[in-house]
Image 1 (tube, helix red, strand yellow):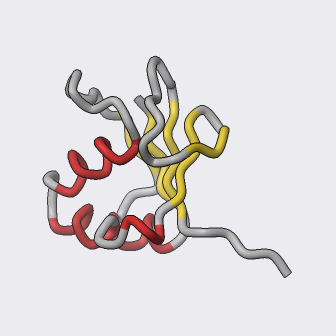
Image 2 (cartoon, rainbow, N blue to C red):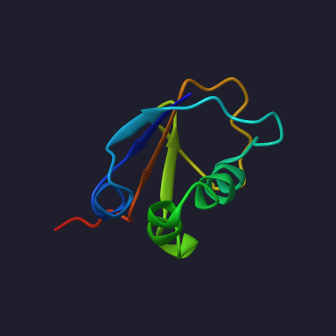
Length: 83
C-alpha cells in the first residue's frame, strides 16, 4: 500500500511517501497509525497526537476508524485551513 505524508508529518517522519506491506490485522487508518508508531521514534513523534491527523483513502477524506479494504493509497496530513 502506498502511504503518503504531508506537511509537518513528512518533516517529523522524514519521508514523503513509502510503499508498505501491512499486516492483515491493520484494517483502518487508526490501526495503521498504531502500527506505524511502533516502527520508530520518528513515526511516534509524527503521530503523537491523533487529534491533529486527517486522512484520505484513495483520495477520499475518511474517518480514522473507517475500514480501508483493498485501498491502494492512504494519505496522512494535518487539518487544512482556508483563508
